[in-house]
Image 1: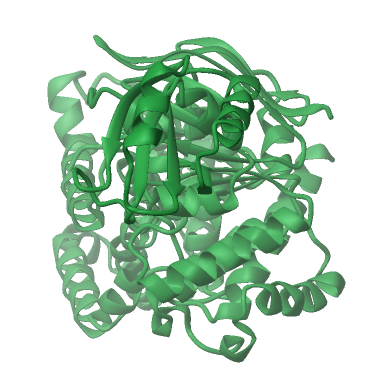
Image 2: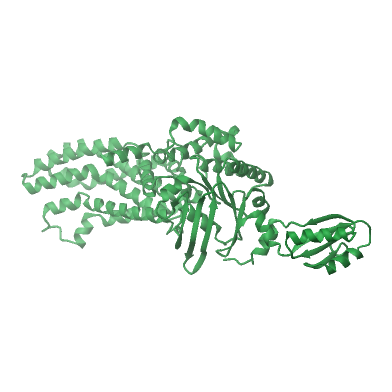
Amino acid sequence: MKLWRWWQQLQAHPLYLREKGEWGNPNPYYTRFTNLMPFFVLAGLVFSFCGAGTNTLLFESDDALWWTWCIIFLPILVKNIILLNATILAPVLTAPTISHEINRGTWDILRLTPQPTFFIVIAKLIGSLGRLSFMTTLLLINIFEAIIMSLIGFFISSPTITITIGIIFGATSIIFRPFLEILFIALIGLILSTFLRSANTAIATSYILWICFKLANNIILWSGIFYDVLPTPSYFLSLTFTSTNYLIIIIILLAILYWRSYRLDTGYDWHLWG
Amino acid sequence: MSNIIEIKGLTKKYGQLTALNDLTIDVPEGSVVGFIGPNGAGKTTTMRILTTLMKPTSGEAWVNGYSVLTNPQAVRRSIGYMPDFFGVYDDMKVWEYLDFFAACYDIPASTREGMIGDLLALVDLTHKYDAFVDSLSRGMKQRLCLARTLAHDPQVLILDEPASGLDPRARIEMRELLLELRNMGKTIFFSSHILSEVADICTSIAILEAGELVTYGDIAEMKRLLRAHRLIQVRILGDDMTPLQDFLLQAPNVTTITQDIDVDLPPNTLRFDFNGDDEALSQLLRDMITQGLPVINFSEETGDLEDVFLQMTKGIVN
């Protein structure tokens, strides 16, 4: 109940509304990046077709699955395009938020408003992510994909408890992983924004960290380094696959953000890099 | 009159550098305090601590009875702060800018519209109601920023160099605005490099140098105290200054005597240093008249704030 009231308060707060674009235009970088949208759509198409091409085994080994793949390929295509756009735009939305305020000299004024600094930072995070369009579409596609994948899972295997747990984890991952990815990159951008004076540097560094994390988060790479994939129980693999790592890292990032907010609020750490 | 700002032993250190050392000041309600000192004296540091934007290394400060350390949220509601590097949102219109910050202070939408009109009238920006902030001149932006500090009707205004970078006209407008705020009963604590401006507005001044408080008190009283050697000018009828000179040479408390030919003084005028009090000065004038000296002008030179500042500070920079 308390959390709900806090959420309601946040959504009515001018800082949230401003970041959402309902009170002036706080983020000039966002406008510039949205002009590049056609290129992101093209990139999404290319990645999707490349992804489909790598799944030739699925196409060839079982003809019965071919039509299923065709049914879900189009939604996945749309999902990939939305996801790519969102993950590219997320740091553009969050990375300039604080560094831009500090550069403009408005950060001190905002800090003097009665809301705690962490509230200001979270209002900025949620508000700026609110500018991302097609999130409902993304959720619907994810649910659709999760249902199809779960049905395939049950259809091609003998449903034991382990496999059922694996399928549930998998379906949950399909639904939430894209949002966790967006939140992850948005948080990276926001945290960098509290360190760096230059919004451009913050955006570029967010992308670099995102790419590094994508590489490190690859299950195939991890399986070779940390554990042998073959004797590993399937539920553990499912656990790894279901973005728990994203969830853990997001919690860590939120803790870092809280610490940074405290540092900025108390003026212990005023001199930023960059 | 109760103190609205109390500062006790405030110290701020940045590593080895002591930006502020054991500052203690009490500011009575409704007063206008000019905070003056060279660059690096610790003025902005003091203001940032008072506005809760920075924690002191030691010491304590209270604004409107609330501690800046233990109750910063209450302090923030009691103050309006204009930083030296004031920030405005260029992408907003003038009314939107005020509306946004008023909303941040939880002022209901129903009262905001009327309040914005009043604030813009106060800072003489009514004609710019619908203009983008980007299109305003620096002076106008500064006034808009001041209007923003008043949005939640704070008792205390803390203004860091409110007139810096303004042209003479904008500076005069800013001074008029501060005088109006003083008449409205606001307590104003502001820093400035323009000493004449401080002298015009302030009821008291605090001089800070290298993080140390050099002096703090009523502006007129301070000028008087500084004059341990008061400069007195006497003008007499006629060209013969010898009787006056002879009289002054024998008079008590009179030291250096300067003639009109030595410095830029009106004709038939002598200037002398006097180290007595008001009673002794009055007695001196009576004796002159009794001696038959034809005195037509007897006046004390009052030093301006520049004199006070130069005498008080040593030019030490942190």
